[in-house]
Structures are given as C-alpha cells and as structure tokens.
Image (tube, rainbow, N blue to C red; front, side):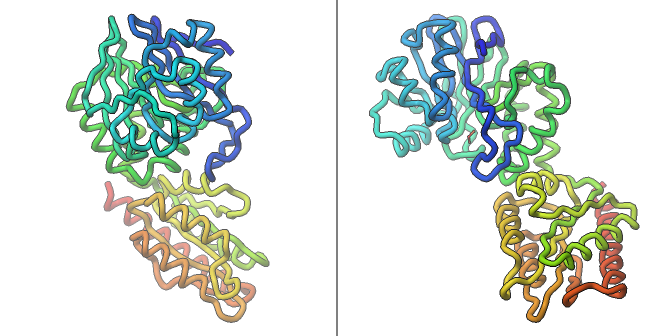
Length: 400
Ligand code: FEO
C-alpha cells in the first residue's frame, strides 16, 4: 500500500489491520485500520501512531515520503493502545526527544502506559501550533471517548483530525467515503452505537461548540476507517441524529433459549408487535454478536428481552448482552421481559430489573411460561407483543 495524499503535503500513512475480528469485545467483521497522518511543512508533523505490531506499515509509508528522522513533532490525540501502542518504536524512529504534543490528560495517561521519558508538551484547549504555512489548533474532547481525547484542526486546509470520533472499523484500500459509498454508514453507525453512545450528550455539546466557533470543515480524518471528504456534514448530521436517540418505529426481541421454548415465545411476541404495524425482529443472542445487537438497539423504540431460567438466574448470554447494553446507556426506550422456565423461574424478574435500571418504560405484566408454550401461552405472547406494538405507536406520536 502507498501513502495517500489528502491535501497538498498532507498524507494518510497509517496501517490496515485486515484480520482483526474482535476489538475488545466488538465484532470487526471487516477488520479495521489505525490511521495516522503526516503533514509536511516547515515543521513536519505526525498525527497519531498505530497499534503495536503495525509500526512497520506506518514507518514504511512515512519513508516513502520523507526520512522519519525528519519528523519534527509527534501529536497524540488519544492514548488508547490502538493508537499509542506503537509509540515506543515510532518515537525511536523519529527521535526519542522530539516534542510529543498531547492534551494535559494525555501526558498523564501516556506516562501511565509507558516508562519512556518523552518530551511531552501538554496542550490547553484551543492552543495553537504554527508549523510554517499552517497553524494547528488543539481542541479538547474530554470523554469522547477517553479523558485524554482531543482533536487537531488545520484551518488552512479545513481538515479535522478527529481521533476516534467519526471512525468506523473498516479495513479497505479505498481511503475515502465517496469511494466506498453509502455502505460505510452502516459501519459508522455500529461504531457510534458501540463506542460513543454513552457519551451522546457530550457529542451534541461538541457539535454545538464547533458550530458556534464556525469551524469550517472540508475533510474529517478519523483514526479508523475512511476519511470523510465528499460530504463531512453527512457524518456530523448522523452523529447528531444518533446522539439524540430519537427512536425509529421498530422493535427488537432479543433472546436466548435452551430447549426452544423462549424462542417460540420470542417469535410470537415479534408477530404480535408486527400485527400493530411495527417492524419487529427476533434476535437470537448466540446467532448475533453483542455489538450487532447494540447497533439495532441504537434506533429501536422497544427492546424486548427474553431469557430462560438457568440455576435460578437469567441465562449467562442474556446477562452478557444486558451488561454490555447498560454500560452504553441507551435512552428513551420501551422495555419488556419474557421467558420460559422449569420450576423456579427467576429470569424474567431479573431481566426486567435490568431494563428498569436502564430507565426503560416497562410494559407489564411480563410473560412467563412454564416448560413449553401451548396455544394459550403463545396467544398470551402475541397479546403481549400487541401491547408492546401499541406502546411503540403511542411513543412515535408523542415523540413527533
Ligand atoms: Fe481507537 Fe479509543 O481507540
């Protein structure tokens, strides 16, 4: 792969990870990339490193443009190891005592990850750095999604180097949004749902700040996936929409099952929801990765969760999904619980408690069926589904 020139003297020089399929619990079926950007000016700057093990790709790309030793300044927008793991080798390649710019929290966090005594420059929010014909501005984006996160903005080229924000776990040679086409939005949505959903209010505040500052953005260069050059407003608008968490008329019925009883219930509940004109889909947990489920949760109006009872508890896979979901803090949802059981039957109560903890509007009474649902039991599931569908329809009217 060759480095790609984004604007005159500005290059994408990062690494592609074609084979990663699990990114700390997030399924990355299309791999990912660890983007890094080189700005050649009177002073030459490298923005962000790569994950450990991918340094050769980065150094190889830089070397096709300049001798890495000629890099004057390293900028780290974010400490997480997929961007800083390669720093020791990169700093060694460019010169251990070259200035390393990052946020003040970045100094603290990088120092907690690495023992090297690098020449840190902790920047203030809004601080600028003149590199010749360009001025870079550092914008603190604390908790988007780490305490150290920041953006670097180049006003002359109107490029925002946005760290994880606006990224996608997508490995490809296409480099730009317009080359991949609209399919990239599905990857961006999944990324938002699984990485940024819990910081939705901060995303909205940040977009407001950027708009108030009248920051002109022609290109967005994230640290994962493709660069947004065709219409950066499209991904910004999508972030605003996703952050507002205004649901679509849609319900998902997420469940696991031991002997297919809870599955039969899930299918009947989905049928009932659909009878009220609400698109509904049963999702079997062991057939769908938790990160795919979260992508569906992002814009669903109703989250219905079913679990058999196993040893007085909810099924472990259901617990996994609920724990993951709770951490990402979905807002403005209708919730409902159901499940089959043999003798003690605690799972439904436990699932409902988790949905309540997420402040979902609960549809009651939850449906519990002993052993195998008969016709009467399935009819009660359909009725429960219709009740959920009606609640979704009311919600859609109220949210308009
Ligand atoms: Fe791509 Fe938060 O690291």
